[in-house]
Length: 453
Image 1 (cartoon, rainbow, N blue to C red):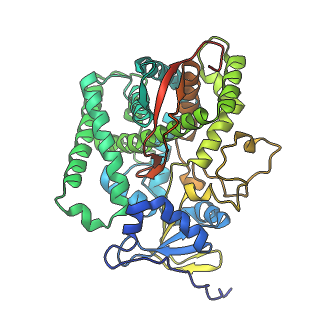
Image 2: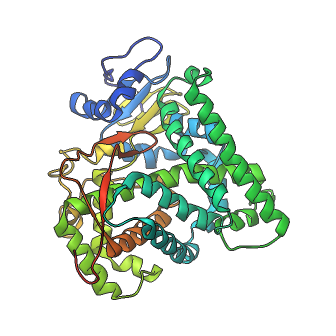
Image 3: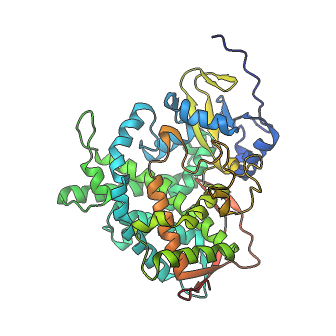
């Protein structure tokens, strides 16, 4: 069948030589990407790298086609390619058969049985963290959630084997790496080769994180002890084709990428969820009522995770209104047909979950936080309009783990403390590696048992 000529793809205004649209992206990437949905059609071209086309896909049907129907034939694109270059190849950054192979190696670590074992570890980490928060004092919620997410990660991956000094240094180094990855993806490649202070800090922090993980791998291999944590599972894993075990370098890459992607994402979602509960006392009260009716006086367990439908709707609404993903990429390997357009090989494709989930043509009152929009009786969004964990063969491997982590953390925090927003505070999103609150300070108040106060 002969394909008809493709309609022209508009080009976003404001590109400059050498930098393309990097200036707009560095100044306010969320506003720039959101403006594309308002000003252009289903596809629009921007420039991230000189000489490379990046097509922003804005139509939900085309996004789903790109991720599912075309997914097996696409490379993962610049975002993941840069992550691979910066952090090492992993299941997150791999494409094609390499992705399939790596996913099969790691899938046991995220199985339901393993996730069930992690809940007690997660809950203990949350309880310990909340115990350090001083009543009556203002808490930097964003930083507290990063610390908590790293605590949960370290205890599930390393079984708490890192000493306190090493853990604190790992947390600081990961914070530098998380911020640096987002900046380097936006900037042209030549910038990262300059001897600038932020490049030096990034390289030193990344190397330090990898060295910390490598030492943990070496110690566990030398001991021959199976601690039952994620690290032990990776050490037991083998390549299904060759039968060979993962190398220490491969394990480091998987854990480093998991730490950057998982910790940053979890911290951002938790921050936004606590922010919305503080803004909506009625929603918070419904969450507490559900927790009391389901749990009584006992702590949350894995069996409870699927028995809290209202809390799950709160999380879904947080993932809609405050999705942490602002630029997810793919790349055509061969000439590819996407809707009415024929795209040549080597074309960068991208979509923005944050902008997609706020589109008024897809969601009524999109800026209103309304967990009940997810009731079965409510009008469901169009297919492809809500993609909290992506879609297709590259859908997030840790989606069940992440939801369990979020439910466990919010349930434990909400029952223990009440977080108050200062009246004079304006909370704005900023997109780095993820979309997170620029500043989120809240006052800690002890929760009276059995009440919403």
